[in-house]
Image (cartoon, rainbow, N blue to C red; front, side, top):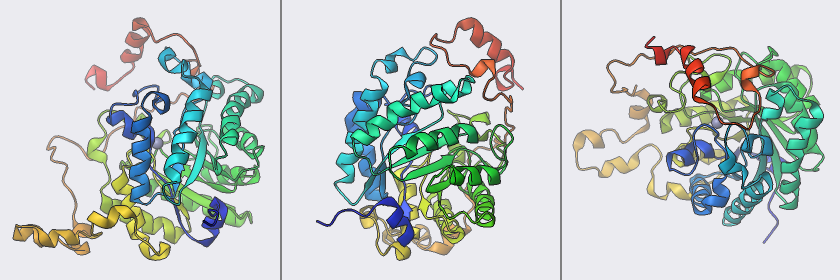
Length: 400
Ligand SMILES: [Zn+2]
């Protein structure tokens, strides 16, 4: 068998489809704890992680992103999370790489190792301290011969530059993706400058993941692209947005919406939203197109189906699925048969079924960021007293 093409060659030649957000998907299936969002499931429940990789591969993902989100030692031991810390950064990352590789080899998939923002940085600690956390993960990725690295979910471009520097030491292609929107990073740096700084730091692919819906994310990417073009910087673009609509989110994104994380369901994007997302991303010039929190395999399948012509293939998961609902022609009821076509689904405005729900919410907007005492890394669990004090500042808890 010919060796697999690498990430950069694939991006030069066409589209690379990413996968979805594993912490959100596996939390719903009962294998990840909401709150710490750490990936010890790679050791505890390998079948669940393997199964999710397989679903995405079947749906058209070209990348099996090792489930290493938040798997740095400082995050694993943050705020009373000892039950995860015992599996260690090394143990969790190593297991994640093996699982991703196993499934990638069942198809033409690439394996990526991922780094994300650290409590060490949020605590205002030094570059050396922060990079020490990154290096421990990068070492495991290199030992496992992953195909490339993704530094993702950074909300401060300074920490991102430090992550890119750590990743580049591996000699592997580096993808850099911030969880920011059109308003820029949490230290007031514009989205344009973030893009330019990521490219100048040496990342091969730059862009945005998480925190905002596909269309807000593409607004941010449009600005990134303009700035990169103006600076003459040639890099590929990545989009891995949420599968939740967030037109009302502000700078901090969806974690700031009152529905985060347990009441987001009314905001879920349909597969038809994902067809539109894939087309608009492609037309903008984005070539690494995937998803983050809220994305399930069927969302990725919609991306793969929208771009079937460009990719010259349909995913295996389309075997039971005729893209624009052609299978509905077999439905018993005539009014459902009438819905078998693109026009119906593109014109539909789905109802929420919640007569007392508003279309938009008000973000909490506490405005705390790196260096704030309330964000500091600490091993002790949150006390009842601390919780009572936090609840006093919470509008919804007080019936407002
Ligand atoms: Zn996410």
